[in-house]
Image (cartoon, rainbow, N blue to C red):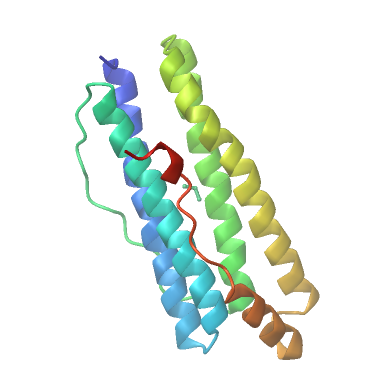
Length: 172
Ligand code: FEO
């Protein structure tokens, strides 16, 4: 049975992952509204990934005999100042998520919960990749100043992203 402090912290993380999903879906809608279907697709895949993260935390709390208590999802940004700004916000958001995952790991260490430490390691590694990917896209967007032919080429590239369930291998 999972300890109360971790049950609470993991429930907060479920909410944070759903909040991330909600934010990226909002960003997808924004990109659609300015005619960038490829960027909209990338954000929609990002939304699906966040749902997968939320569900993985959900399943883990249940596996450990804890109780999931879903709470309201905070409002997300709807308007952005342009295609570059969306990725600035995305990077800031992923950095926030990294700090949340690190805090969760700190609590697992304090509580000597080795199973949760092991469970969280995937997310620690994932955040390194998430931040690196987002930073790369942001740098490219800045290089082309978020406009012109370069932006259309990037949009075509962003359209090729497909969803791969990161937890497919561990599903029953
Ligand atoms: Fe669930 Fe983008 O981290």
